[in-house]
Image (cartoon, rainbow over all chains, first blue to last red; front, side):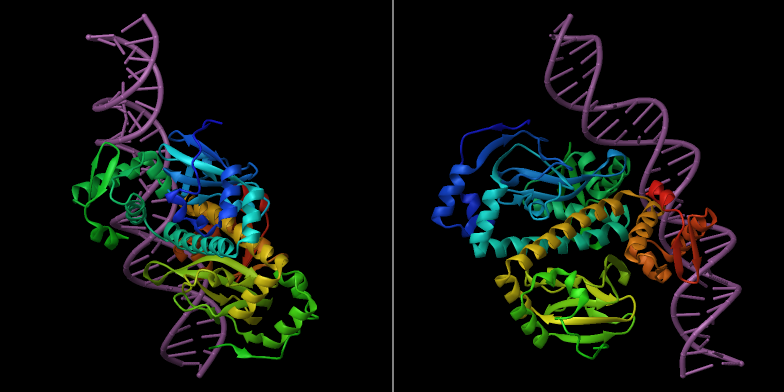
Length: 227
Length: 227
DNA sequence: CGAGCGATTGAAAAGACTCAACCACCGTGG
DNA sequence: CCACGGTGGTTGAGTCTTTTCAATCGCTCG
């Protein structure tokens, strides 16, 4: 493992938790969770889990950002999802009993807690609200993937890039988008050369600006039109 | 509605049910289900539900086949899933409280039972096995969509067609694939002209044969290589 | 018989990919 | 301090794939 254990983050006082799926936990549950979970610091690009391996629990992002991707054709990654602070990653894999079909890795330095499968499933069984939250999450994710399939299958690379930039602008809130060209190409599903040329066009059209690898969306409206 | 109510199909003796998510129901539950559900006959291409409308229950396919699709760019449909006998369609939408983001329609004449949202959620609450089955379904579906995204984003139309033919061959078991070129194009995510040209090539290469709209896979191995 | 729809073909144009080369930046070790 | 190597970013040119548009064909249904 690349990441290392780090100072314990208390669930009880954790502000991130309050806005997460775990917001409904009761005191007893929080205490138990606090005792059994493991907190780790991840450097940029450290893996959380890898396609084909067996799920042993879920990952709770205290701070930082994570990409979820599959290894596609000739080892080219395809990003299917990005998660940030407050999101829980990897619970989808716990129910089927199958190995992961996706991998996850950090996009930047992150603090992430690990909750074992047994603990998570126990909480799911006992806590109705948590269970409903998880079901809701699964449904939303399923819906968003149906839309993403359509996006990928029907749209040109230019249109896909516009959509992804909108997704990422939202994901990064105020801050500029901080993705390598490679990762961006792996999200849009194109060659990095093509991606770079399109970014250049968007830049010339005043739709985005960029400094180094950081991209800022200037004209959201125009991106929506392309998309 | 295009479909019409039809002779009641008894859940108790239903062979289809025994291999479905509802296999775990107990006698009391079956009786209740039997009383409250509605059975209908659907002609080919009749809609089950439509993107944007509010989910009111789930659809249980007694016999027949169903496509699940989104309306994409310029009204072009994108098929994201196909379901057949024994599958329950539409339960993904019940948990989020949001309108459908996909539509569903029959691919052929089908008999399909409708179970109300309240009944379905009640059974979910009370029946642990059903609940686990549903969670498992959701997870599997999520996994398969992640792979499908990668497929669509990274592969050429030719490769995508090969994959889809493999999926459909499995779906149709022994029988020939019975899809309009339009639907096939809407699954692969391409123009129907392109689809037709590629089918012709596959046919010339002896990989498939076709009579009218029916397609038979002759050489699965070669399709796997393309894919 | 004629309308209309799905299937098919052809030709031209647009889009995207590949390959090859080059640049720019950054951290390392001499 | 600077040369070095490596990685990620950028550009150009040629090629292949895919789309688009237009036209034709064949069949079914009223």
